[in-house]
Length: 117
Image (cartoon, rainbow, N blue to C red):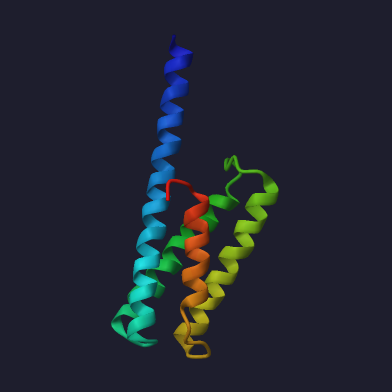
């Protein structure tokens, strides 16, 4: 009985984590779309880049943790994406890039991969 209860708690916790991740990507997409309309250097741009940077920093820390249960190949791909995202946000921030569409597309793809779209 305790084992079944524990399993249910773990499933609930995993689903809550996925819900939080989906909401975070929803927010990132919303901010990035607003930044795309307002343009690089706008308040919306600064807010979007800061949020995306924080999100991917947290995700990269989690993906690097030895307790992360994702398959190594998936973790490696997500880490590569995260590094690219951080580079892209820096390129937009420093003015060498001004298009947010790739960040929006990547965020949307990851969001869809989390399910319940």
